[in-house]
Structure formats: structure tokens, C-alpha cells
Image (cartoon, rainbow over all chains, first blue to last red; front, side):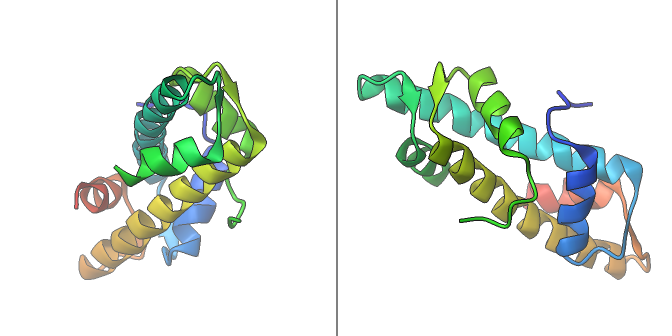
Length: 69
Length: 69
């Protein structure tokens, strides 16, 4: 299972928006898990980029750069 | 900007959980955009995998497989 920060209703919306006619409960949980793992990787890198630049505040450019790699 | 399905408060939680001491407003929006793009790619592929298997319901295994590639 997952850390459970992202709401499952939002996972369902995103899957349906992408073309899924119906979505099982565990599919929503699986998407949440995947997205939260991705967010953790990006967040970790973005925090290091901000620190590297002498900032405590993570900015948009840090997130964009972290997502690129 | 983004489609705005994921809540910004959750973006802040995820970034702080990953080690960011402070997070700018546009960093939250940037993370939302990145994650929603990722979700759209995964959702699109998962929906095609379900259809390929003769199902209308997207299941956990579809999401997992879609996220792998």
C-alpha cells in the first residue's frame, strides 16, 4: 500500500480523464502509490537543488529541473 | 498551468515529506503539473491495456504495467 497523501477520488478522476471507462478500487490505490513514489523522488531532488543554491525554499525551477532527470 | 485535479495542499505535503523545508506556491503548481502529466500517460496506457484484455474496468495490474513502461 501507499502513504496515502493523494486523495483516491482524484486518482479516479485522472484515470477516467485518461480514457478509463471504469476503475477498480485497487487501481486507484496503485496510481496513488506510483504518483507518490514519483513525487518523493522529485521532491528529494528539488530539495537538494534548492539547498545547493543556498535556499531553504523549493521553487518552481527546482521542481522542473528535478522532474527532468 | 495545470488541469488542477490534484490538491495543492497535498503537493506541499509531498514536497515537505521529501525534505523541502519551505515550498513556494508555484513549486506546488509545478509538482501538480508534472504528476498530472504522468498520471495521464499511465492512465491512457492502462485504459488501453484493459481494453486489450476485453475489460472496461481498469485494474491494479493495468496501472502497474502501464507505470513500468
